[in-house]
Length: 90
Image 1 (cartoon, rainbow, N blue to C red):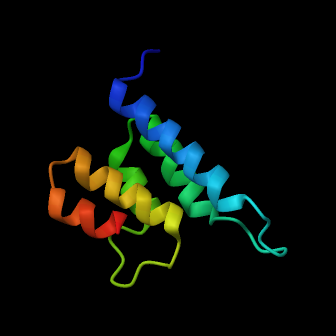
Image 2 (image 1 turned 30 degrees about the vertical axis):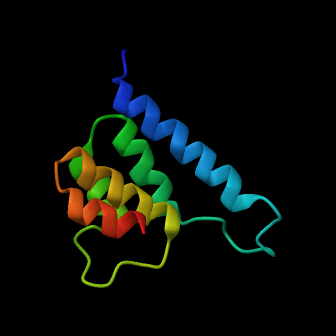
């Protein structure tokens, strides 16, 4: 199985972000949601539509999960929607 440069970069950034986000502990809370984890797995496997659902892309009020927001931004960027991607990243 070969991954595109974009998929490898997205996975590397996600891992780096996860490492930074978990540094210092979360006081017993989940570090990120199970949906965000499922979304990143789907994204890396090339299942963008399933990733969007897991990241809450279709929800009117997505959860305040920075890992899911980064995933939504990555999907938007990959699909050519740069303004939405920028909004999710910021």
